Length: 402
Image (cartoon, rainbow, N blue to C red; front, side, top):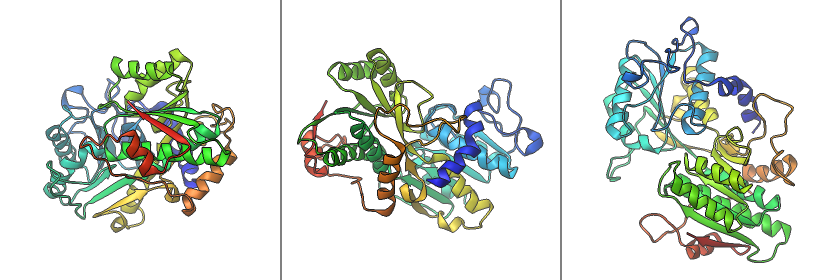
């Protein structure tokens, strides 16, 4: 966690001024385009004529999405600017395997030696790209390369597959909410992909342990558990969140990309709270009490260092590496960007930094080990209340699915 605090200082200015541009040409980067990006919009956000060594390909979101794209890009910028390495991001023209591959082709044509791809949507494109470009190093965040039919999984030596222990981050969020005095919790996940499932399972387990620690009665914590089936900001998702708040839910863990924007909007109207995801979302809304974060920037920097500074690519290449509490890969925010004297726990009523440090240490030393997966009968991955209760050993927490 100390490494995260140090890295925060390095990327603070990046986060505050992020407009989607790389470093100016005179210090090893590329001058930004007039439209705030790195290249004319007509070629998807990147130009083969610019020339750059490190490329980031965005998923279907934007570079300032306050989520995976932005967190990953901040890591690229922090490292590349410190080392004077040219860097660029490219937004694909279409959100599809073909569109992502085309963006990778563009990056390699422009001279990219390292390509960073944030999110599981790149699993199939990277499976193909790793063979097509054996001399290019790929950093695949939150995914492992596989064929479209999931029949074959293979991570070649030029690919670093980076995953995160979302169950730990979710655990911290659930634990903090209950320790703060909340008894009616909500979870709104996007699609039931492994990362989202792990966040939710950890959330329930953290709430259970906090309730046990506080000596609360069995069933005293009520949790409404829901998957939206998408990662979108839309009226349906806002209506679902609004209904949950009307039913008494005090806080919703919004774990689905842009779904969080819908939840924040509903929370603002209901004077309720939200737990953000992936990156610190307190800057998006006053309703965000904390966020279950992944060390996206920290993990990107760690892998880039293995390439450019420590000659230790084999630490990551050709394998899957989990970033967790022990190596600064997950956590709740402990600093406020731009104000080193601010209290990152100021939106809690009771939960403190000291309590956080204590439970975080238990994740680090392994004395607390949240469960990451459970058996789910439905092919959609949507667990029933019974499956959640029995598989996670919930007693204090009563789950209702919707």
